[in-house]
Length: 548
Ligand SMILES: [Zn+2]
Image (cartoon, rainbow, N blue to C red; front, side, top):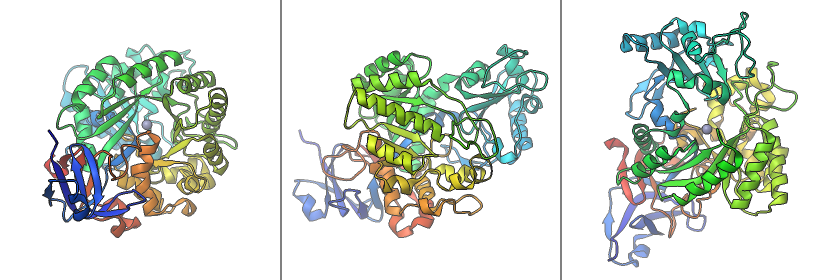
């Protein structure tokens, strides 16, 4: 039995296949593309059904989000406390909170809703850098409740603010704590700001934000799927999942459902295990992969976040004189992971924000590749925000890819200019143009839930480098619309080692398309974020955003 062939007509098809850049029709059989071209050319494949529903739409390869977290879906269970307006998976927009008082007020509303009892309040998206240099301390959160534990995960995901009750329940309301992630007040008690994964984990369980949330849940995973359809994403990396057995079982089941609309590439996070256990588990996971749930890749963190001053940066250090940040793993652990990964042919992505962390990783790659030479490893530095031209040249020489955090320019660019790294480094942060010029394979990302999922917005950031006040931060690092569209399709697919299957519309690849009401080349760079998305075709199945 042969599967039926459908030929879709479109206003324009941008294929990202350099040898056949544009087409008017695309033929699909099952979940595979037969080819793109004219109707006449495609008719040669035999009997077909002509589907004209996209005749006035523009098709692109399904967008690939190379760094997000499926927990974006799950976070909508908790109270959103971010500075910017944000739309949830149902389409409701939550107004941004512009002061500590506004945050306290929203949480007081939640407290009233919860009524009696000691159920924790869990919240996310806090970004105190916008409120001036204030600390959101346990004192602030005690204004909401002193009997109920409260925890807010900061937007960066690297800090958590908790109230006194949460510290008390965690056994931390005492003097004499000596931990770099637990700052103390004048009385010698924790301030309530917990920095880095270690410190966050000491309190997380008591505020309902434990490590399990990084593994998404069934409801959250489905929410994430719909968020992807709204944004035209057909493949999304889930970049730091602890992937416990029960989560993997759930993810395999949910992604296998006929109406689950996105392919998830879930990387096993290095936390709570030894390097050899991590590699062993990743090899097991690789064997469990399906088309819509790709497993067997690894994620490690080298440092923290720049705006939280937990990133490791080289001299001359932070612009405002803040002390250097935190290491999230030892060089010995990182070295061991990379050597084992090369031995077992596993793909590893590493989070570096500061340039000292990037430099450490480049040294580690160099030593590991000397011991275990491998030509096409696709090791990828994630964020890598402060890399300079010399570091991009080393990446090129070592065969390393980069996935830059273009959304940062918009969300924190002003703060980076004024406070964290100062004007010169802020203007070359997330240096897309330098990466392309030096020949480093490039992707760009949202890191959702850190910033909202939306590859066209991310591409707009890379093209314009505009901040909310309209300042252009680093004219020289802007890239063209064409380059930006490549990074959110074939570029991201390459970093995940999936460019043989995804990222372009061409013979033999997966039938993944993003269906647009506007032509991104016509609308131009300045308006790229406003491209209207109709929905997607994922693995030959049609999903309209309007039907969510
Ligand atoms: Zn991330």
